[in-house]
Image 1 (tube, rainbow, N blue to C red):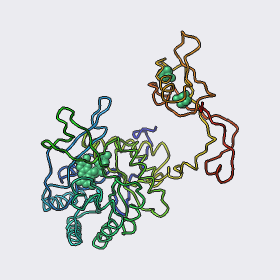
Image 2 (cartoon, helix red, strand yellow):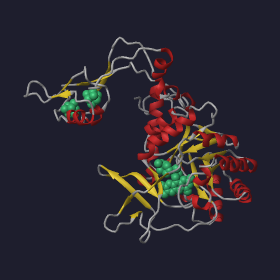
Image 3 (tube, rainbow, N blue to C red):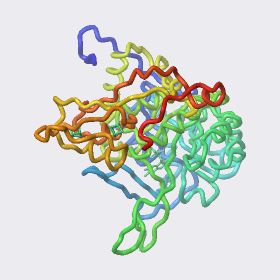
Image 4 (cartoon, rainbow, N blue to C red):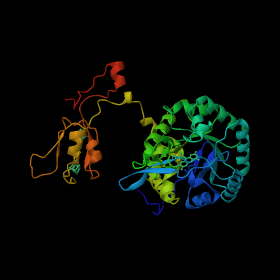
Amino acid sequence: MLSPTKPGFKKPDLTSNTGGIISPNPFWLASAPPANSGGQIMRAFDAGWGGAVWKTLGQPIQNVSSRFGAVGWNGRNGVGFNNIELITDRPLETNFREIYEVKKRYPNHAVIVSLMVETREEWKEIIQRSEDAGADGLELNFGCPHGMCERGMGSAVGQEPKINERITGWAKEFAKVPVLVKLTPNVGDIRPHGLAAKRGGADGVSLINTIKSIIGVDIDTFVPQPIVGNLSTNGGYCGVAVRPIALHMCASLAREPDFRLPISGIGGIANWRDAVEFMLLGSSSVQVCTEVMLKGYRIVEDMIQGLEGWMMDKGFTKLDDFVGKSIPHYSEWGDLDLNYETVAKINPVSCIGCQLCMVACDDGAHQCIHPNADAAIRVPVVDESECVGCNLCQIVCPVQGCITMEPVANGFPTASWNDHVEHGKVLRPKKGAH
Ligand SMILES: Cc1cc2nc3c(=O)[nH]c(=O)nc-3n(C[C@H](O)[C@H](O)[C@H](O)COP(=O)(O)O)c2cc1C
Ligand code: SF4
Ligand code: SF4
């Protein structure tokens, strides 16, 4: 990859436009504790963040203590993160005054104000006050899966397309700045909910908010976590563990022909590669919460540098050159070529002979990695005639690049399940079906 310091380096333009909300780069703080106050957001902008979605404003609430939980793996805590926090617990006047100050000092950064209230009158008033304070855009929080939904807000709205459409319609009636609708992942299919926001007039959507969850149980006290006295409740799950779910929801909407609205991608973004993946699947901007909570605002430096370097390497000069570029490669299962075939190949030079691949293939796949005929050699042997190309051995191999999945020229022409059903195309014989 080209170094940004190399002579002749011309930085790509990272300016991002999400439904009319312009920011100097696509990296935004998500509406959450890192975007709770003006002082924090100004420090984040100084660190390099291009935008911030203010911690959701609404009628004053009281939070509980404790309120976070985490799952760890391999020495890193917070791979999955859970919270039972509600919206802002600071006075509305304080928030609006700070929004005004931030916008005065950072006129070119995007300040999006997240909102959650109940009645039409309340929406009208809070939108007016947000715009008076200088908001560049609004984000309607239809996603919070705990506390607020019991009061008829948050995911209670996001799960009901008719209510989503109606409240989005109110917001669009009152707002002069762009309106994004933040969707809840706590639904079977995200598309009807994105389409409802579109019918309501939204300028774009943000997704995902958190996933309804119980993070764990204290097996000594029997109380689920996070513990509030001797009770707990379900919370919202986020962090890197949720990224695949978020990517799928982003892509589902991006490839929906009737949708075609800008998307601000959220969910488990921890570095520039994650951000690029969201953008390739249709996000114009990306939002980060958990990784900032765990590591601080400075992670954005690496995100910006990594994105610039990758764009240079690919010859992209602006974000629109690649936003959505992976969508044509995402299809239905019935369109996949059933005659395409790969097999695992082990590189005997890099193999350390740990035989983890053999155990995995024996117990979890198709029993086709065998000990070397020469007992003195620890490098196992793949029986390619039985290998179904499932990838499991490659996933467990501790040596990167040691196992590669190689395409096989099997002589069969392309044939998907749909081709087979509709046109009687011939499928290659099954392997590993003993
Ligand atoms: C402690 C905490 C508080 C949050 N508060 C809000 C909120 O007030 N409004 C909102 O729209 N989303 C809220 N979220 C959700 C995040 O904005 C984001 O959608 C979610 O955490 C997924 O992103 P991540 O995986 O980067 O954390 C909160 C998340 C956490 C962890
Ligand atoms: S898991 Fe990888 S390193 Fe270990 S034996 Fe298999 S191929 Fe070799
Ligand atoms: S790809 Fe799957 S079937 Fe083939 S050797 Fe690896 S684990 Fe076994």
